[in-house]
Image 1 (cartoon, rainbow, N blue to C red):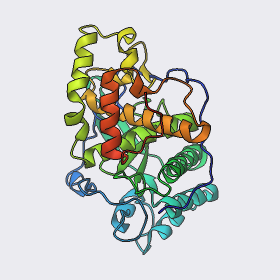
Image 2: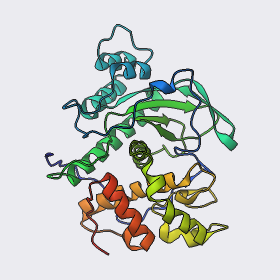
Image 3: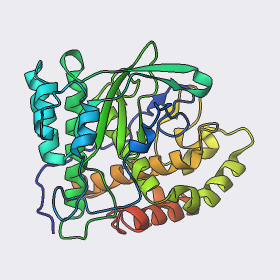
Length: 336
């Protein structure tokens, strides 16, 4: 059983303005980086789910070897992760305190990604360089720490006196990078790694960081459930796209869009085509809607707009499937 957490999650009482992404912006799926020889083999496995509690009973953890790869400039003599963090962040005492606090509270390690050229598809090549979140970029580390704490608070309250869900949001490897001359991608997930671009167009506020992290962490969990969304949601998703096609419009898609994020000058992100397997993005946006609605129910006791599941039969089926697979059937929103 989890102790009741007392941090109140702030949720806006009215529907937010749409979040706008650059055209075809890749959140996670369509553009994965090219790896150096052997690097992909070292990515963490996503085939086994364990409870989210840290360092107990075989719970997930970032290993010392994984932390060394995240913090390559730390001395090899360090025998534990806290030593690595202390040395890597030595030049910025405030950032060091944030990184240590994040690790101690949530088991997540904030370091850097590799210097690499990412194949961005029709965007061309994207040069990503390591960028430890210190100095000018320290605010990103603060936003990440606050976002993960907020997510932790939500799950703590939602599952107080309830069995923990088959969902992982702790013990993440956080790789901070900076894109050279571009503002995409903002973030993407692979295994239990989340790569975070300090120049990303979505990552300019706490709210933007928190929503993006929730979206990306869902991708990791979706992968851990053997690509669940591609099998469970595809039939209804394809039917919606067919109904609103061949030229998709927001006017037709609005009842089925789980979140308000849109591509610049285009569609709801959940229905953006030519974006990898788009049903995965629909599922991640559906998870974001779950987080928003459960947060609002916990803080206000009611929703400020009609529940997503009540807007269309397709929504109701997708919602029930998602909640059952990832969130233990726990849904505070009232029946339709």
